[in-house]
Length: 188
Image (cartoon, rainbow, N blue to C red; front, side):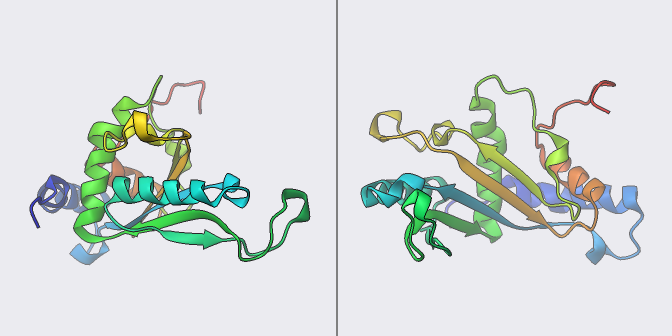
């Protein structure tokens, strides 16, 4: 392993003690942590042209550093000319140091490159402390060459934590440096 993500040491040295103090956990094992990050890319156009799915798989492999699995349709929908079992997208589940390395690149490189970015909504957490976000363009990652892509595609990112509540999950992600939007009095 050539590179060791800085977020791992930041979690152990700074974030974990801060969360332990803030939420007054009785045990260190109760402190929330990242479990996995799931990247998902839907390619609906793959119904007519299977080459587009291969391109999406290659782009996802470059972004994540891991070969994606292909998702297939569960049901047939005649209006979309879709049959059960047809490939419709790809996904990757990142764990361990690859997860931290991807999160570091997402926070420090990709999110600042998003056009007209005003912060991530803190309402995107489900009731169990997991965070979902979508990117409209895969080209915010510097690994993707703008000249080599055929179509700009969206990407869904799910960050799964061991937090029990949204408040714990939000504090964990803020500790990592996720740029959440500042709430105004109109938002509440």
